[in-house]
Length: 139
View (cartoon, one colour):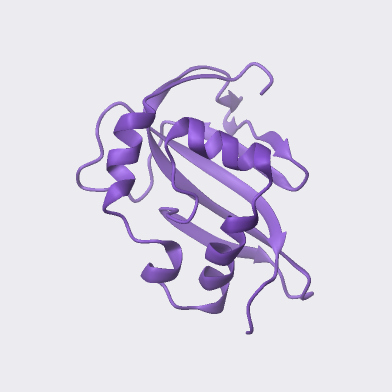
């Protein structure tokens, strides 16, 4: 990821996710159910990134539909928390720098944590997402 350097602690992050609920367990709406189903079909590069950081892809801290009314695909925003810190390349000026992981899958990192868990260790980061996934559920 161009110029991005983060120091992650995947073992601490796995512990953080061990007791968390999946998106579909936290919210029963069609949008959240769809994201949770689609997580099983993320491209290999995306699964590899999540695995290397210790993040469970079904357990986003927040996920929301940006665009998906056309039926075949759905564009989601959201974020995940992880243990670690940004060494270099987290921002382009005042905005988060997004990096392409695979076609339709972009991530960015910030140390500004939204909706932090009560027991989130320090230092911690937030991985922002912009993912376009297939629509897989009934509305």
